[in-house]
Image (cartoon, rainbow, N blue to C red):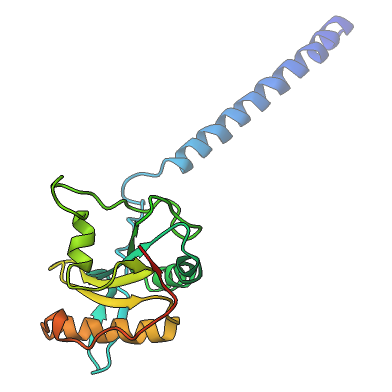
Length: 200
């Protein structure tokens, strides 16, 4: 091999090496693209949520998706600030949906963006949700929570004032049992007296 051919080969070698590297990178990129977009046959569909069941006092079990909690709170209520974090933690643990309503327009750390009761009839003295939940004579105060059957919208007073979570869970289970037995909420014993409330 003459010197010119050797020099030409040495000069051409880096170009050939770069072309090979480019081809390898292109092949790796193509493999990545194929992996990031699997075909429909290999895509796993999300599993349906396993129901969270609660054991009731009489041995029956209830799906927590069938019930919810409606809680009335106020941003300036010291008792809501004390009760709401425990309620939220408990509800999250059992996948119970909580609908927080504010009586003063503000939220708190647990429910920073609560629902605001609305008045559909301007002549009505109180907002619709206030009439629905407190229309049975229960004093308007916070925190007040109700257990609600999400299918029938029947509401049962759960607590008015701060309640420890063990007591609340036992009462919640008893109220679900009463709902399953189609008891009228007015036939249940009154809520226990509690001084840890802020009147509206």
